Length: 161
Image 1 (cartoon, rainbow, N blue to C red):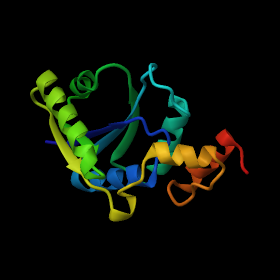
Image 2 (cartoon, rainbow, N blue to C red):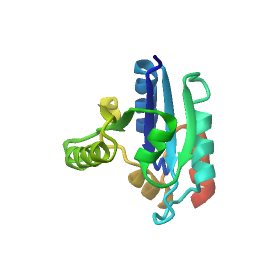
Image 3 (cartoon, helix red, strand yellow):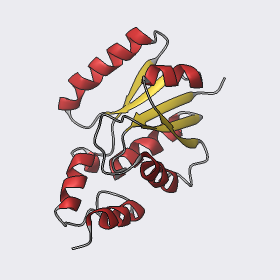
Image 4 (cartoon, helix red, strand yellow):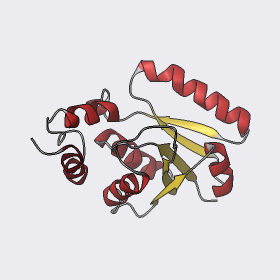
């Protein structure tokens, strides 16, 4: 039986912390689907296609990782893919309450799902996409927090200063 896991997120933009979680999941599971949420009610800096492109470039060397997108309830996507494992990254203690609520709701909606929490390397503990967007918007380099490809995309989006 193949061990399949799904790692959902907005990835707006993809950070080195996200990438660290993807690498960890790829070592534990036979197949990992990294899926970009397509939530029209959220205001994203990058389009779904741009976020997919950044992810595809970043995971190119990981043969057991596939990139996808979904709209609607995550549990419906999991059922469609016949996936029973959901990957979530935990950075700091303040993430725990929210993540436990999500895990509980997901389990109530899909009793067969198990949420697996992975912690990124210590250097990414306080790294968040919102912070990366803000520093890029203000003209600071985000190179330490994202891949070179994503850094170029941020510079193009916000203009190099």
